[in-house]
Amino acid sequence: MRRKILLCCVLLVEAYGYRYEKELHEHLFANYSSDVFPSETIGQPVNVSIHAEMNYIIGIDEIHEILSSDLQLTLSWTDVSLAWNEDIYGGIKDIIVPVMRMWVPDVAIQNALSERRRLVKDDQQVTVTSSGAVFWIADYIGPSLCPLVMTKYPFDRQKCTLYIEALSHGKDKVQFVHITALDGSGIYPNGQWRFVESTCNLTQETSGDSVALVTLYMQRRREYYLVTIVLPTVVTSLLNPFVFLLPAESGEKMGLSTTLLLFYSVMLTHIFSNIPSNSHTMPVIGFFLGAQLLLSALSLGCSVVLLHVKHNTAPAKEDQREEERRAFYRRVDRLLFWLFAISGLILFISIFVYILN
Image (tube, rainbow, N blue to C red; front, side, top):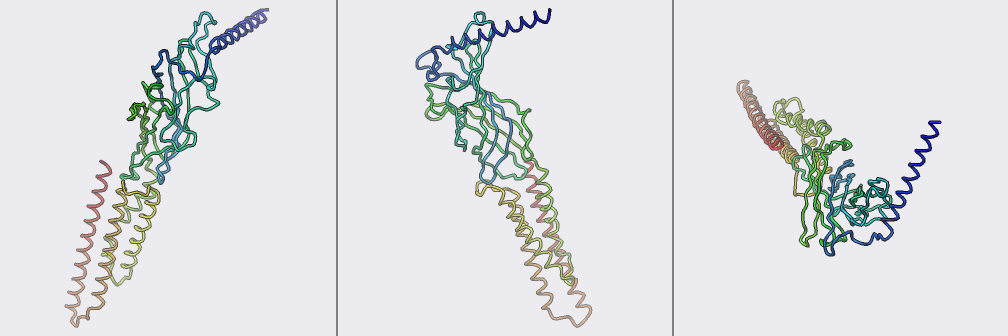
C-alpha cells in the first residue's frame, strides 16, 4: 500500500513538473524572437562574458605553423525578457533550450582555418535561469594559425593565441566585458606537447569592436628529441677533434672525417625539414650543427693537406731526421686536436647557456 502511495506521489510531481515547464516555455517564447537583440535600452550593446577552457591539444603542424585544438567556451549574458518568477512555475530555476530557438551572439574564431569559424551548431543547448541569465557552451575543434618561435628547438616553449570576435555584430550590438580561463588541470595529455598555462585578456580593434584573446602556453616534451637529435649531435661533436689522433698509416683519418661531414649534413636536413621554412626564427641547434659541419670540413681539409705533405716529402736518409719529421707531424696533429677540441667546447657551452636562458 505504501509503495502505491509513493508511486502515485512521484507520478503526480512529475506531471505537475511537466505542466509547469510546458507553461513556462509557452510563456517565455510566446512573443520571443531570436532575431531581436536582448538589450534593455535601444543603442546599448549586449554585454557578453566568456569563460575559456582547453579540453585537448590535438597537435601542432610545425611546418605550416598550425595549431589543432579543442577549445570550449562558455558565453553568458542577460536577457530580461526570459526572466520568470520561480514561485509561479513550481520552483523551476532553469531550463534547457535548443540553441536554434535562442538569440546568441555571432561569435567566431578570427584566426581559425576551418570553414566553420562560427561557434553556432544545430545540436547545441542553451541554459536559461529564472533571473534571465543565459549560458551557452560552445566548442571549437579545428585548426588555427599559430606563429612559432623555433629559436630554442627542441627545448622550445610555444605561445598560441586564439582571437574570439563578434563576427557580424558591431561595437554597438555586442561587447565582451569579461573573460576567464581555467588552469588546464583537466586537459587531456598530449604526447608531444605539455600544456603549461593559459591567459585571457580583452582588446579592441581600430574599429572599436572588442576581441577576446585566449593565449595558450605549451612546452615541448623533450625525451624523444634528446634521444634522436641531441644525443647523436653531442656524441659526434666530441669525435670531431679525434680525427687528428688517428695515425696516418691506419688509413682511417679520411674515412672518419668524411663520415662526420656526412652525418652533420644529414642531421641538418632532418632538422630543417621538420620546422617552418622561414628565416625569422632559426633554431640555435641548426647553427650548432652548421658550425660543426664547418669544423668537420676544416678537419677534412687539414687532414688532406697533412697527408699530401707527408707522402710527398722526400724520405730522410738518416734515422734521426726521420724521427724528427715524425715528431713534427705528431706535434701538428696534437695542436690541431686541441684547437678543434677547444673550438667545439666553446661552441657547445655557448649553445647550452643560450638554451638555458
